[in-house]
Length: 284
Image 1 (cartoon, rainbow, N blue to C red):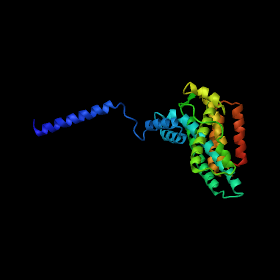
Image 2: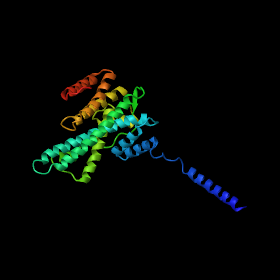
Image 3: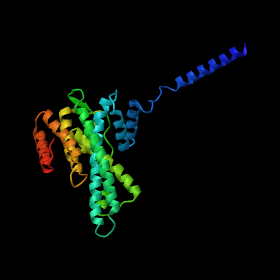
Image 4: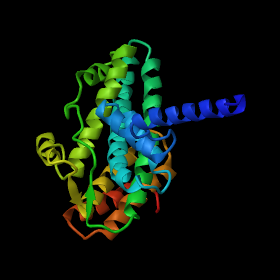
């Protein structure tokens, strides 16, 4: 065998061996940057209890129209709604702590956290409104499927909140745990409301036990529209003072009221939205 033929023969053997090794390893994992990759990452982070990272991965999916968008949107709506509420509550708690601290010591560390958490709440609220808008204009269907397990965490307020509101600054390590705990609590409460069990974790858990609960589109939309109304306070004149963002959330809430069947809940929500618009002299 000539040296050229021998080289070709050895190369063929190496390539064949490489193919065998590649095939024996099973299916390749999703490529980074693809919707499949972000979907898998969202599931992994969710199981780990990191709902902030979960929400980031879901946001990457819904930026485009792909095979996972329809499945990710309801999940993103619940996650971002819960995070917006969690961050807003943290900001309000630190603001209360700053008022106490101002009487005898330096309130600056509390005020710094107020700014951090209000900005985080703002980002989550806008993501919530945008995801909700996409969901409202998605293909018509009678039910929405929630493709995630019941969230971990507790519906009760963590003890650290009372410390902060009384003017006690928690250490950085405790603060990180508090953020994680509040994120889990916010998502849990949002999930409860999404399945019609507002603030009733035990009932919501039973609904989730069957796996991938399906909920009425109208009921889901009305509840999430009410959450948009609740988080609008964040953009009021005494907090972030961003009227255009307030209008964005209220517009989405009012659009829901006008499109779903009329009920006691929609009538109450319409009254709340109109009242807030009048209070802050806003027009949609």
